[in-house]
Length: 263
Image 1 (spheres, rainbow, N blue to C red):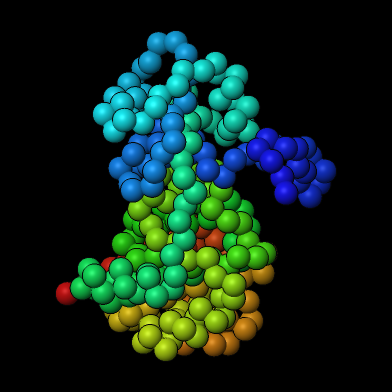
Image 2 (cartoon, rainbow, N blue to C red):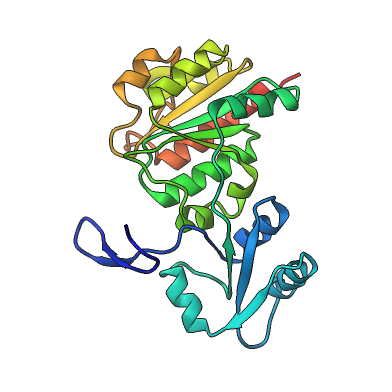
């Protein structure tokens, strides 16, 4: 098991630093953390004059009786593992995962039809962070991710989500296909985002729906595509044949949100 700051390596052999997954790094991420319900052990701020939003964040932390510790910038650099920390890092409790049923219950509590995003094997933490921000911004009730062969909720994901992670329920499941079948039994329609499907702007997302996006290299797995109710696509008119997964997710989710929330 890797310990905090133990060295690890990218596939090409380049050295990197393994950072603590419970660190919340940067001003936006810490701001949203303080708005949420996750418990915070303490907040580290760089020594010296406090400027801009850091002063406000420190005041909020003190008001919430969260310990604020001043430390050298070098320590923040080490803890963040190269992520831009903007002079502040929070040490928070681990993100609590929920169940698939919990996500559906969130929709019920809001008196809304389920609107769910499923990330089938996204491996890049920056992509997952962007996808989380898109899902939360579009009003999704939750995100479903797999336990294996995909990135989990790390500090990089938290930073890339710009704080949206604090406001979105996430279920981490053993098998995406099983989660899809479970949602279907609960009356949710499944839309797999893959090439060769119906253009997304011609699809009716108005009912209970879950949109599946796939991995950067292989897209949605064949099994999940086969058991999905619909296959939706983004028509491409230029030289490139597809969008980055985070970009594609934003296009489809924004359209789905518009259709889903039409009264």
